Image 1 (cartoon, rainbow, N blue to C red):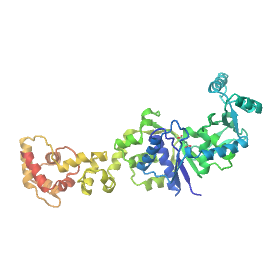
Image 2 (image 1 turned 45 degrees about the horizontal axis):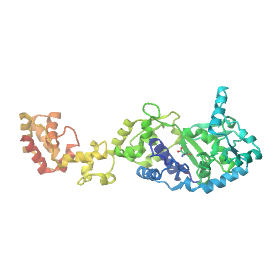
Image 3 (image 1 turned 135 degrees about the vertical axis):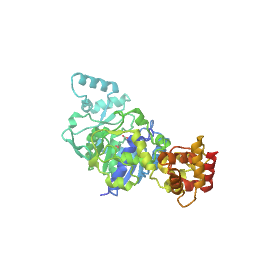
Length: 442
Ligand code: GLU
């Protein structure tokens, strides 16, 4: 059976590192098995859902290279929900309730006050048809709850958490539809998972108790539940799920110069027993993907780690992959020379100025100027001009190490650090190298 996974964001904001991670893992799970990865836009909440967020989700997934093999939108599937809902009403698995939010709150408080769990008491199940008719006559519409079968234990083998058990009697019958007819998350998700043939639901552990009640919805609708796995949540480096982490959107990361490949490499393994490494080849990440390596402890997202992985990824990016983002004039040799100095691709322009000039160099003392004059005289433009120049100077002056190299680097680039001089010299070119040495002498 083909593995089918889905990523189901609500379009009420931009994707952030937490849901990018969920999307990535679902994508990897599908790819590893040669399966399909679907995007489901959970936009039943018309008020909070926004079309520009739907577009942004698609754009962010495209930027990340997580292309869905299909897309569905919940707002276009209401007919399907109506039909399944009608079946469950028919079976007596869904019932009408009228308690107001205040009444429910009071019931909860009374139970808690008596040291009891705040479980809904199913008072509405005792209403007669006459009671319902009276409510209707008053113009009061019901909201609807799914009746959990207390005789059917809720158990599944979680792909990450292992065996899970819930006692349905310890759970409230979930509200599945509001009095205004709008849908809550729980039931449409199950209807969609059945209809879309989802074989594996991989999501955050904040959904564990939803899974428990959704299991009975699958069976009530005559379907085999999918496999479930719930991953530990992502927390900020300070330990709790910080606001900043939630605010760390794909757009902000992109603006910071984070490469999608860096985010993918980090999030692929964060919270697993596998080491986070700057792996550029997704095939390697996919081959190693294994729910069995996922830990139960919250995964710590550390921005400094992302920056480190990003730099290490940039150092590996081939020219063809970055060409469109580089300043005009940089060729493959230029990219290869400057790439080890970059933390972000956007810094290429700055380093490229070292090649194109003009460079601003410090004023040198007399001794250094004499040394640089000697360098200008010794320059012999071979196929390895840097090696030849420094060897000649070493022999002639007895200088070595920093005393040998630093004045040359400063004279030629104006900077104390930078790309490998051996790679830079051919890019700068003979005439310009000579000119820079002479200008440094003054
Ligand atoms: N829209 C839900 C959420 O973002 C989907 C949960 C699920 O994967 O079923 O939490």
